[in-house]
Image (cartoon, rainbow over the protein chains, first blue to last red):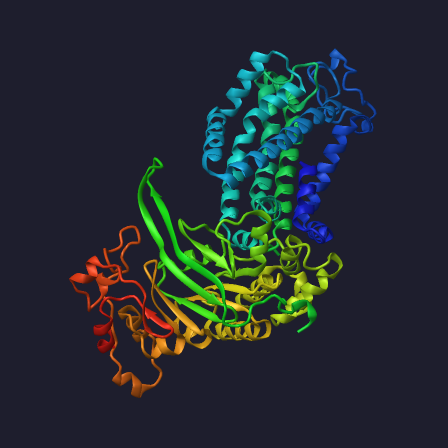
Length: 296
Length: 343
């Protein structure tokens, strides 16, 4: 997601990327969400230093004797059901969730921009054919379809989960992209550009895409959140990532059986999950405002 | 004028035909929900048009009469169903690619709504640089910034405005930017599609002054589309009146305004408010009854007959063609003699 927004920012403000950055930095919503996300992404890239802060950084150093027990010195979140340090487990769990969230969203945005632009700009038969394909994918209930695919494939790792989620998350964005391309295509400034002699490619790149992308950008930021939650749901339902993989979804899946006796097992992974989801939503909001020249 | 804005050496002498349309027709199919054609909107029907170099030809008519469709045809933003167009000696009806780009250098358009005609995400400077980037051979890369500043000053804006976005400007200022953008490629012909109708009355006068000033300065020919006769009277050399896709009267502005020959023109002119109370008492107001008929199903014969107080049986069967009523003044009505006395 972050790379998509960065690219967008430079399209929007050719010649004045600093203006947008300065605008963003003045917004508390951006500063807070960007800081939280940087920490979480760092945690996903290099979990070891974060996990080691309290001196017990190995998520697989477990002591069954302490299974499910609460906070103790050096173990602020307590222990999971295997007696492993829960704090280290939660830190290591960031990687699959964030990787899946970002990768699936990036794939969806790329497909949405390509397919949506072609369908919206050229219209006619192209639009009808692509529109029906989108409808078919759109018709499947997201989670049910992902369950079917993952059950059929049988292999459950980050990449198959990514593929299953991506296969059904692009249609929504593509539809939004298509309709906002149609709106932009009929704008008077596009007619003016055509009268000036601009080529199709130039009109798409300079006039239609920058004006049509904003709704997709917002949807994408919400979608990162939705996909992280979707991955957790799949894992929770037992068709996503499998133990011994460490992920927030796996932790929540395990925690459901012990909710009464050890509620901290559910509490900490869900706090991290919620903060990540919220941070992406806020970031999307802030970026949307910053790239809109009309918002002050 | 600096050398950048000079009119081109190959510009025709004033008075020669710069742009000629012959039998221009544009029909739009009307489709039902299943995509079947169930009718045809005859937006523009068999229009002949000559725009002479350096003149301002006004095209007037009610909304929905096909004025803007004709503007699209003339600027090749849309292609005619039938008919042909010539720019001087060249047939331009089917231009593509490089030649079409060359045509666009000569013929530019200023659109009606300056609030919608500028990309909200580009600064004024970026919008003005775009024509120079598209027609890369006109101004060298290093000189484009200077050209942008020059264009802004030409239309009465400040050089510093180029760093701002369209939403920071008023409608009049935006229309100035649109005019500057059209002039960036030094066209010979400027089609103005209701350029002031979206603006406040006080601003309209300023934009009209600017257009007149630019015409003198740059030797431009205007096709000036408007529904406002008061605006047309001030700026046009010739007037063409359109009704339901056809031109019904055409002639020098002064003559058409003082001696309108077509009943429709007479009705249009009688609806212009009169400021002089003495003249007001002597003038009879012609009030047309009914609405403009649907262009999907226009009346047979003369399209105006359903609202004309002079209509006879002949009007239902004959499609009137433009006849000379004086050297440069033509009208399309089978009852021209009756119309002369009724006005």
